[in-house]
Image (cartoon, rainbow, N blue to C red; front, side, top):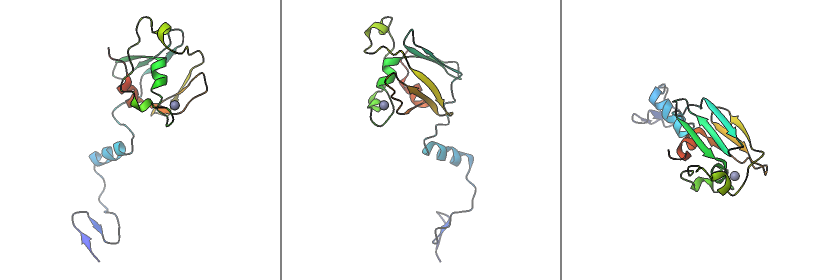
Length: 140
Ligand SMILES: [Zn+2]
């Protein structure tokens, strides 16, 4: 019966009995895709009149997302939103310039992970994770 001192596992495949350290646990959380460094925002509000989604983050930072930009960055498998690096800042006239006029958008929290958005066409493909939204937010 072999025992590898480096891996701490026996040849039978039994796991080492050592408890994971906090750093190890944090790494495992990250590895599972659960971002631990972006806490849920303080406030999320939809402004259909202005065609914007406003997010007030726990650290006091505020982001304004134009709805068209958010739709283009849809995180589901069918849309190509993953290609979007950053949503452009909403200009003064973005309401008139954007392709769509969203009238019946609904938002709901997807647990503590992020936001689910249902669009006018009924599309609600994926979860906009807080860390992704932070990444996508328009530049100041
Ligand atoms: Zn989609």
